Length: 187
Image (tube, rainbow, N blue to C red; front, side, top):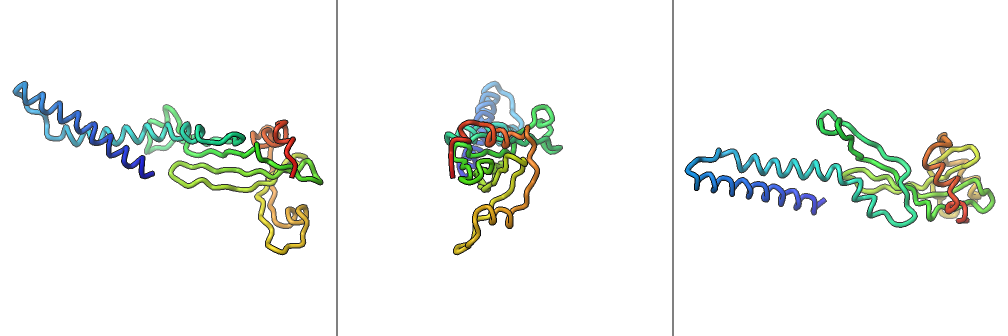
């Protein structure tokens, strides 16, 4: 965030410098440039850089993902206060699953435990532990058992989770339940 702020200021100064050169060239030709030219160019620099960052944020985040972490969902957005997003929608949120480290339950091979990472523009990444049931198919947030709990993993999952339906064409279901790499890891 700090680097983006510094880059935004640098873009403003760069464009204002360009306007300053235009102002001096106008003076050499004997004409006067309007007084609002430098602030206008600075504003264009700030605005242009921010729009550029909005569209490139998703690609930058995807390039930084480690091996084994795959995108399962993206959310494109169009907003009235971003009219250019109607021409080309922006990806401002996405979900990535750590399929490389997904683990299969030792007693029930249709139950998988996977880390989901929730990315959103200008927010910290959130990590959510998910239980995926490949037979139902359904998913649920996994609540870590309290210290000293005598419940088995199956009992704990049944008591603490709220299952949500998962369709078979959902990318999360496909990545966890049908990919061979996810099938090979055991809990």
